Image (cartoon, rainbow, N blue to C red; front, side, top):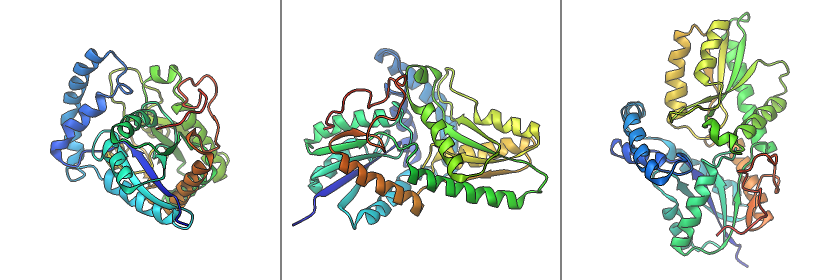
Length: 355
């Protein structure tokens, strides 16, 4: 008897694939109502103002990466590795649905239908849930699936911020990078760990978005799994993108503080599982330069997961458990993991089928 065909749809941000794509990518990003939460007629104009204001800097950043984002190729490598990791358990094929540049959700939904999937698992490459990332992607997927006429059993994984396998894989990378950094430093120089996540406007978190809480939960779980008591560590946030107040402390402020404190820093890209401009430019170039100017005694970064075998194995386990839950939405433990104050948790309402 043939096995059921399971389509695993990987959600990610997307990135421009050429210099000409940078402007429309930015317009797509800032036109998303999950990002700019203002009336449509205001958002239409504001998105263009912000995109234009950021175009020069974004173009310069992507020029450092060869004029394009590497995110699609890295996500494709994750997809290939995940298919191999699932091969003994299910007939699985991975599809990529980017939010702001090709391949969009509609392209992925049509490909899933053409493959003849019996079942779909929606797997965000965002371990921590936010209405601005996974939530936005789920909304786009529902519209795309309807347009493509894709109506099969579908289960979406909303988050896996404290999944033991994901945490263990992350902790192993942090521990290895810490040991390497420590070995290269003078023993008298303290080493501080900066867990750097993408920021969010304060008003989105105040409205009930679970993201910041889940970031803090991930960091706490990684520190526990690492078993390094007394480690000097800070949770901070990078990539401020709009002219409103964002959650803090900011990563650049923490780097400057490290310089004042005469300590070295090890930066952990805790909310990113694939390299892109925020890791390869912001962390590796801009913040490294800032650290040098601020007198930081040493600047080191933990690698992003990308196709790390331990991370891929964690994703495979998540896929299999999500299949077992059945149609609708679930977390890595099945039910809701967010406090009731997190009103934007997708599991706040009773489970319903995702089509």
